[in-house]
Length: 365
Image 1 (cartoon, helix red, strand yellow):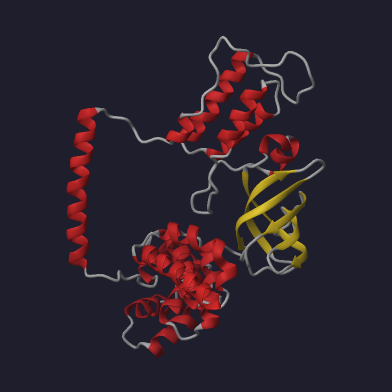
Image 2 (image 1 turned 45 degrees about the horizontal axis):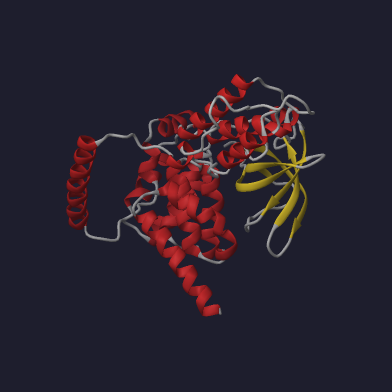
């Protein structure tokens, strides 16, 4: 059984490595973050995840994951370079210097470490560091991600792919051009206009006319087709909790099921704590990105739970307490200031959050 488990883990990391070496960093993050439980002691896991966060501009996540990679292998040059760059972004020149000096000890000819040391030898002030980062030159100090196959093979493959794509696109256009859409969403339609769309008696949270129900349904589909899933889910919830007839509500639930879990790197259309608590039913199944502090932490074998003090990450503002569930392994402690990307779950008398991704907040970043 253990051998089977190890084989599956190797396959998972092999897939992540292909994505990583192809510099598809967002895909690496989306693929690896839910698997943290399985790779608590894997250096490669944390290095690929941390470096991908670095290239995606998530410096908080990069520091967290690369620090764990450093714990597992403290003389890995790539990890040290990543930590140095992330610390420079944090304006912690002392830590950046420490890591670049260590790289210089391990690899005297490392050009990235030499560049970093040259920068700091000039006595860069915070303003100079900020200007350097804003210029986009910081990425030149990131650890290099090399492809694992000869470049000429890539060129041949790209040429063949381009030829096939050209033939396909031209042929498809000549036959009948249809823009790429979420076809499964387009197939969900409401009944013909002559059929009743609303109930005329009963207690409902929201009451609409037939035209309004039709418009809301169309708007939900349009949001889904534009990949604005959070906004689409809100419109579906309007119908589910309204005087729309049973058939419309069921189709709204079907549409709602097409919502995709986002990542920090592509999250959009978030909602504030105040918005969610003013109308909880509208936001059931939506994703939010909230900052706060961890308390009442409980770590089980397969999940983690805690109360989240929303808005209290800097101990300046307190908005409310929300119970949170995490179904993957994560480095969390009571008192941690964190940012959560989580799904809103509405219960009879309260709401909770199911975490999709999280990151520790680092002061000054």
